[in-house]
Length: 208
Image (cartoon, rainbow, N blue to C red; front, side):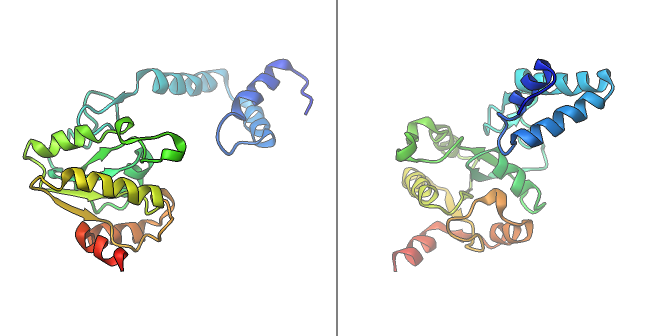
């Protein structure tokens, strides 16, 4: 596609680097910004730059944060004895939107996937184990997407935690196998959290 300005062409090229944004959508966004007041566009670009440069990761759960602790971990009304183990930030957002979970999170930063070169040492597993060893955690909810890699990750972590005095549960299988948490509707996800199962029950069920 030819553009009347190299500046527009460069802006379109940058927008197309975003996931799910094709050239036509990128051009529509660029032309929209071009119609806006320069001050509004500057606020937009400054917000993006500030987010990228100043974002931090919570020292307790590895969620994104504005300070050393995220808003969830810093909230005294959250139950720090119940830890919901998730793959990434999108899963935290999905579960928070159900308004049913009142514990805290632990963000792994991915799942074990040998085909992608991701092993346990590249995830936030050891910090979870240390958190459980501290004695403050009574339950770990394995809220990992029910895929082959997700189940492998759950199995690995449950074995690491098996000798520690902590209850391990998983989401009830209202979440279909092979699905991703972030695409699960809020009602199904809320029901899966509320009716979570002891992990050993899940192992027995899937071994039959």
